[in-house]
Length: 415
Figure 1 (tube, rainbow, N blue to C red):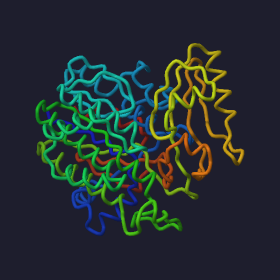
Figure 2 (cartoon, rainbow, N blue to C red):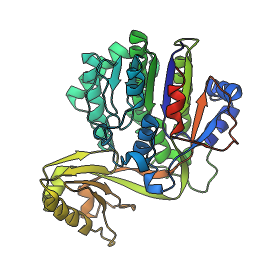
Figure 3 (cartoon, rainbow, N blue to C red):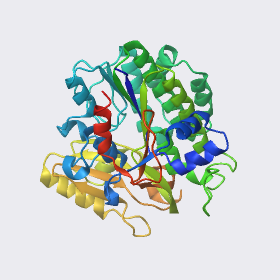
Figure 4 (cartoon, rainbow, N blue to C red):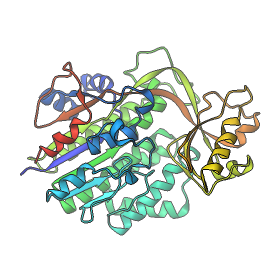
């Protein structure tokens, strides 16, 4: 029985991949495309449901949103759905999962399980790797401010010494001191190094690795890609002309795919993107609250706990539904100087999932600038079509897209 490795390369745009492959920048992926082609996947039709934490939960459970109903990042572990690694473990296979999005650790004897940085669930990994994971969570949460605590720096440094085998990490870490985009590439390189270490140590029958760096970079720097043919350009203060972070992260993925293929010659490899990104029609500014709890308290919100999530999002836990309703009202009442609302809020009873959705520039003279941190200029938006490569098959890109839910059965039937 051959092993299966499932690579989750979140939101890759295969039109851009093919452009870079044609010019020789992605030799490994180009070889895979020539040998196996690729299929397109389709998922949700409602745009609000085309979110990676929804798409990947669909992949992991084989159920569309209408069935699993998981709408928020972080809600996956509480959904009670059987995930692919649970199903395969139930069949007697040894399984491992590294950074799967919106997923819970529900296999008692997993070879390893390290969750994504935004989802609360247990970690099954060596103690130094658990410490490095804590550092990653802190760094990801504070990425907008570029802040890394001394403790996190020490834990991350030890993790690099123990688990990283690549000079890429050192190069990207140094670049990340000057360029924010390089931090996302560095994180993916380090996560992949940790995954490869655990895979070699445990050699599971099934393993999955989720990487988000390309999604992050496409959202914020797609206009700088040599593959982009649209009218927009990012301002020089944001990113100098001639830099192509999209190519940098795609090159990293090309190297990582090569390393995964070398783990075991007979191993079957599947690569999925879940969805992809298209360029936005007009750029959008992204902002994040500087101190979520302090801001909520200052405007009179009633809350027990606030949990920052990806980019602009945060979860507010309240004492009861009545206090949540009052907090929702206060958030929705907040306006920018131009009168546009600052927040969008999803009320789920005793908790609120909020987004700082104001899309325009906030100038330093605006009092609001003291409460927020600039994150990025949005360049890419979600598209529910994803892509899928299987080294055991050949697919035609022009064929009818397959349902994203079908990837579950393809993984199960691989054994």
